[in-house]
Length: 160
Image 1 (cartoon, helix red, strand yellow):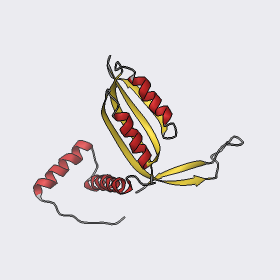
Image 2: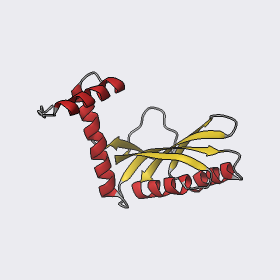
Image 3: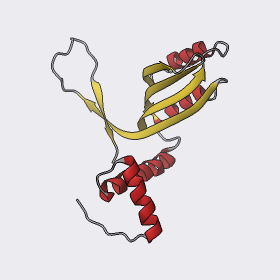
Image 4: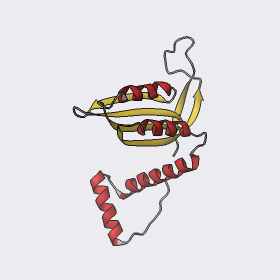
């Protein structure tokens, strides 16, 4: 672990300490590490936009399930991109609104394009995506029982 020292004016330090307390951090160092990771990931995503970099992502959105054929269109989009869609969680918020969270993985450009296509469907609101760049390593080893003919799996390691 490398130690660094930073200087902050009093107002900024008070505001930062208030943020630390609201979020429940144990200390300033943990909060600063999280902020740095967040900004480094954003910079990495900007640099990799349209590249062949791989990612995992969580796409969440709210939609009106009474909107004409919207649920079917959303499901169809996910099936059309089954190579990117890992899992979907669906929650009923009230009589009219549903929240869905979709776990995605694949090429960063394709994941972002799919997220844009889904969240721009008429009737979808509050769409947000959280993208994490990953390193992909093929794995030829087994984790216990492995049926004959099972394909080699991959491990996805978040980039630090």
